[in-house]
Image (cartoon, rainbow, N blue to C red):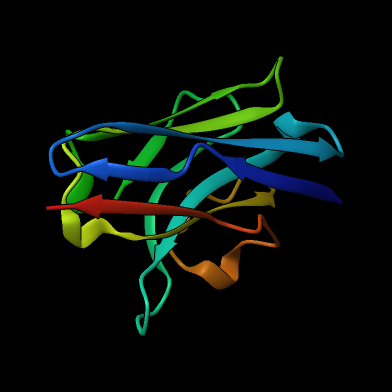
Length: 125
C-alpha cells in the first residue's frame, strides 16, 4: 500500500501559477504510476495529468497541455503538478492518485488504487 498527502493548494489570481506536491509513504514509490485529477463542485472527477514510474512518459488532458507540467522525484517520494496560467474555471479540489503496474497511463479514476485527501485550488478572476 501507499499513502498520499497533497500540499500546495491555495488561492491564485487568474493567470497565476501554483505548484502542488504529493508526498507518498509506504511501498516503494517508484513502483507506482501517478496521476493528478480534479473535481469541481457538482461535477465528476476528471483527469488532469499522469506520469509513469521513471518520469519519462507523461500524459495530459488537452485543456492543460502547455500550461501544466507533471513531474516526480523518486528520491523524495514526491510527484508534482506545476500549474501556470491558471483559469478561474479550474477551481477544484485536486487529487493525486497511484496505481502499480506498467499498463499505460489511464485517464479513468477507477483505474487508480490509492488517493490522497485532496488540495483546494481556487482561481480568482
